[in-house]
Length: 126
Image (cartoon, one colour):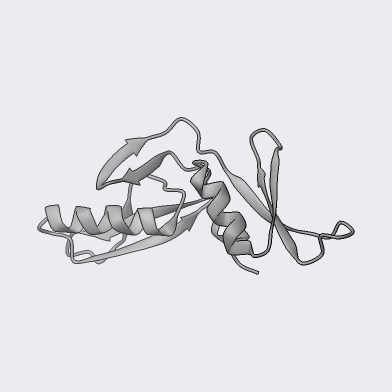
């Protein structure tokens, strides 16, 4: 399971992928970062984003690289409690609080993200 996403480039004639220590909480942020890098570096011939087990250490916010000390993560889980079958809850990992119920997984994800939490990709899918 990926904890983060790492941008990589090919920037020489070797054809080998090269990366750095940047780790983003979402694939979209890593893709935006590496796209920006390709626009600034003349030698970049290809880019990609790979999954990483490392914890995220940067965000890509409004076209800017932002270092983070810790990314707040949330899980989105189906709730099987009586009367709540088919509903979802967003669980904030850092302090164990739950919000919900939400009728769809997408609404639970949106709730967690609106509070500044990053929901890993594997919790966004049914």
